[in-house]
Image (cartoon, rainbow, N blue to C red; front, side, top):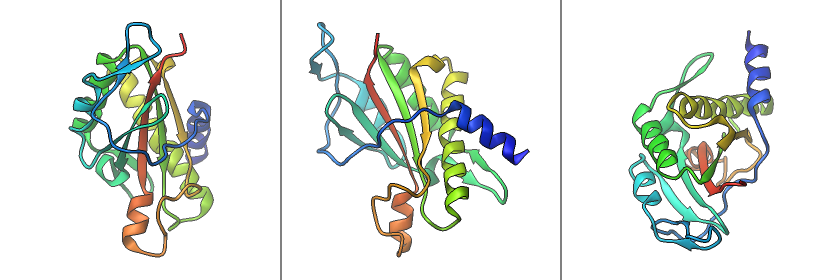
Length: 176
């Protein structure tokens, strides 16, 4: 059964690049012509999420959340535990139907590389599944697990490992 989850998770995953560090912003949405970014209400929704950090990248908005605020780890599985933040995220998606969503999940290096990759893929897939269950089109959402491959802090300390266990959700202009 565990291999089945891996296959399901791998089937649902598409590759996207991770969020980088850029200055904080309040919010953005495409302008009337679709190419310019103007102040809007997206960030107001995203800032409601526990521990979120909202950033503007080149043509997108990225919110980073600690994995610990979304998931309850179990002895043999990962469970999505924060329905409130998923609700906030779903509302943001509904209020911005012109934007696609990329979900990227990361881990620290505590377990094996294979187990970390599998866990991060499952986390990304669970978020995508929760959004689809709340009415967001699956075609708008991509999900990717990166395991321990893209740390943002040292894994040598407890605080560093906690920082590396994160989920980034990127809103970008739709391709249509």
